[in-house]
Length: 518
Image 1 (tube, rainbow, N blue to C red):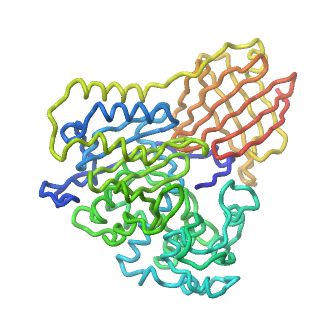
Image 2 (image 1 turned 90 degrees about the vertical axis):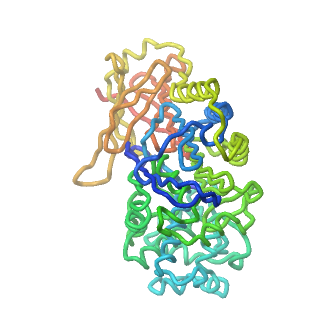
Image 3 (image 1 turned 30 degrees about the horizontal axis):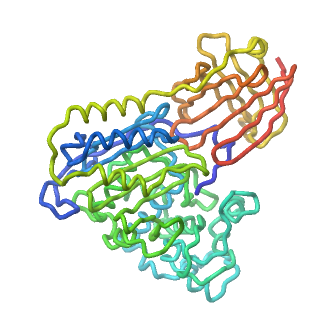
């Protein structure tokens, strides 16, 4: 659902603050109790006060923790009832949302409609881009509408699965005009007939936002969506050559701000007395009129499970904003799962639903609440990996710098220092810029089986741990907190040479060769 070059993985997301507040209105389920608006801060409650069972949530937090998750947050009746952060991730760090970004682009498109900037989602797409030199125009392409882009039924011939160089999505990113590239692809079917996941669709929708507003989608979002909701943690990459924000991915939000998006949808597009997006937009996302894959439905760039009264924004590596309207629940999850791992959204819906016991407060349960508190502490406590020991070789390589041949990661030099009380690593990379040809990165290294978090840097917070696999090979696991990628560097030393096998959760693999220079 989202592509990132591993070289870019050296520059990422840092810690940010988040926000929220309260006021009064009607509950989404029609009850007369005062509504809470978390524009300045989320209120916190025990689960029992909101009719939920603490013991059930404790089991859920433990279950989610067996996967490679970063966070789980559950809100009922406008108050946080459970909020887990799995070490080494910590609260407040903006998280890479991958394809949850698409659902935000959907929301911005809805705001265009609300403001009258877009006359109708039934408008033919190619008519909206008269300045583009669009190829392969036929009757199907002429019939392609904004709605078909929103429903992933555009009919454009597209390949997007393994992110190999010949796939359409990769060719889109290499194109000098990505919007024109998408619109120029041949049609494989009539629009509106068949679901096919195509990240070019939301890219075009982002370009449409720029065309209609004169702003990038990010700038438009800051004013019309993020500011009204109290969202302050947003980051969204660079614009392309035409000034268009990447509409298919690239947005980062802290979990509290992800929940604000879900809360907006829970309240049918209303926020503290203001209709941010049309309620009909939310109704369509909730209903999921398009049959998608793996039992899901789809509409307006949101996934749904109508039989469970659940709809959600989903992103690669287990990013999720989940809305359960009948239960008055919003849940948020972030993670770093590989593509062959997943936490079932259907199971999560069931587990949350089963923890809801009443629409009214339950009697306090001190033991269950203590169990929940213990599960939250356990989540925040890192589980060390096994460590076998340190070979004599460590002394020989400590403090030495290795220079690498040209490689896809653009790594120029690498060094490790084991002798200090706080072991650390250093990397330089080639930038390709004449004014600043190299860039330097460094951080702490945990050798006891746990991650060492480095002080915040401009590109984020490094969390790194290493262990010797044998007498010659050191394996390093590196994360930049809030980014859904994990990197593994296996360094095999032989004399003055080193071979590095690199792999990340996006599936990129690389082999680097270097030699000691000092």
